[in-house]
Structures are given as structure tokens and as C-alpha cells.
Image (cartoon, rainbow, N blue to C red; front, side):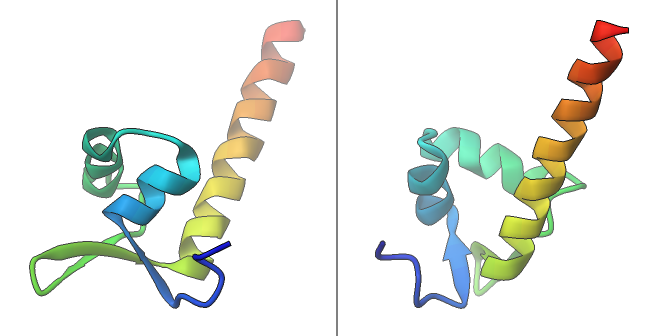
Length: 70
């Protein structure tokens, strides 16, 4: 995968990885819980922070799904 050697991901990278539009990726960067940053007028996120954030989203959704089953 072309993203493996990167230290940071940019909006286009996040859109490609998640198979989302760039517009929706921009909304992620504007969320308070998304650990992105702006450097030289470009949104970016450390690769390790992105994978940790994504893992937390998965775990949160599983918890919500489990609660719905109760």
C-alpha cells in the first residue's frame, strides 16, 4: 500500500483509505474527536493517531450494537 511509509496522512489519503469523498474527509478533520492538525494550511494527521482513532470508532460502534441487542 502506498501509505505504509508515511508519517502523516493528508485529506486525500484519509479519503482513499476510508473510501470516502474528500468533502467528507474534511468533515472528519473538523470534528473535535478527530486528532488531526493543520500545518501550512493543510490538514494532516499522524498515521499512528489515525489508526488509534479508527480503532476507537470501531469499538464504540460495537458497544452501541451490543447495547441495542439487550
